[in-house]
Image (cartoon, rainbow, N blue to C red; front, top):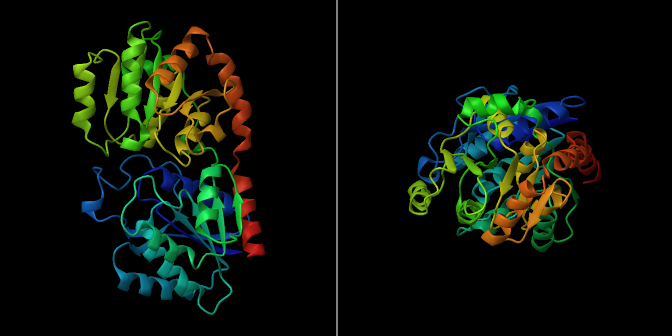
Length: 375
């Protein structure tokens, strides 16, 4: 098949760009694949980070075309007509924010008009964690043209079923982020980051937003500090008020046990961050799924998650990590203490190695192929 992948992709940075590079690489084994991405992804006033472009080693680099201006309707029409002439069999677009609904919806309408092209949406979300006016309208506009959907958790599946009548869809778990390479030795990683060889280290990784629950984990650290010497490494760019978190750490005398790397982590530093940790903690207040679990699994790291959205679907409680009650610093503290007190790391690593075998890119490719044939 001749497939168009329409999404953020290199030279844009972030987890979705990595995801698209991996997906396209696997699709290209049996299909011709073009990747079209943005000339402008977000207008600056809507982007809370420091930069939108990849500045370090991009990892997997595939040829992409920057054609789409996310906020220019004239561009959408011109891009749609240009891509229409290429006669794609399938258009796959990544859907994570309703902001892109008008853009993707218009381009796909023009590509598909009076042709047999199938449109498939890969849904990270149906509606986002942080709701804004227009979310439902923009999503309906995008989904009206879709022939098939891929969802990656039960919670997104339920959202889709409540939003679209009788959709054609497949549920496929988020594959492993294998683009970061293998682990390095824990000793080497800790030395590079300034930790001691025998430190106990837990990791919170990724963009810091309110729904991700870092404040709950910091509160848990207050409890842990009373009985156990554990270091929390917070690595990622703040999309929330950084000063608020730093003040919390200072006021509660956590400076010696909470360590911030408050910037976007380039690909070549990711192995050091994960390899230095004993386990990864996702204290989310809400979620659909999270690619952080799949990065942790790539490095064979146990995961402690809250029981929200699809997080619990990716962690076998007591086997590859712990699943804890959401919104509870006490539950988080108890699970982290139990991880160390009961010496769970080795057995959890074995569980992770078995668990991650479920998360295959080939399974996702087969789902896309089946939807294209069925739709």
